Length: 151
Image 1 (tube, rainbow, N blue to C red):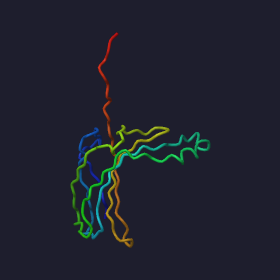
Image 2 (spheres, rainbow, N blue to C red; image 1 turned 135 degrees about the vertical axis):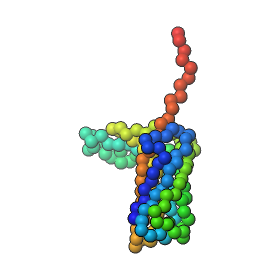
Image 3 (cartoon, rainbow, N blue to C red; image 1 turned 90 degrees about the vertical axis):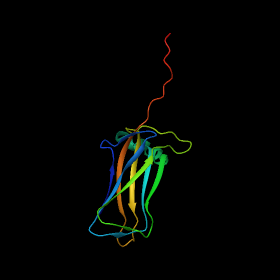
């Protein structure tokens, strides 16, 4: 049995303010009891270490916490419901920054990474363990430019 997140766009690219849509697909031979099924979409800016300078700046980088710029939770099913076998549950959420934050384009560089991802989790008893899935998506933020001035 497995969970899979399928986005409606094959290239997984969205612009700030657009709606992300897709489906959470459960494939299994039988229905599953659970204690909640949810999606969490996050956008995180985190520092990265340059492999050439690991020893020099490691203490500095380890003290810098990641900055969350987006966080959305979608409750897919409430606790106590059963997840039927071979089902696709649709979802949709907007790409919006947290209050006081700005969205930044997806970026994976040497010193910083901006990652947007959707994580799904089906909470089950500790005996069975939780089912999890994750998919990364790309966010493009249009550049805001004023009028051009010729001198």
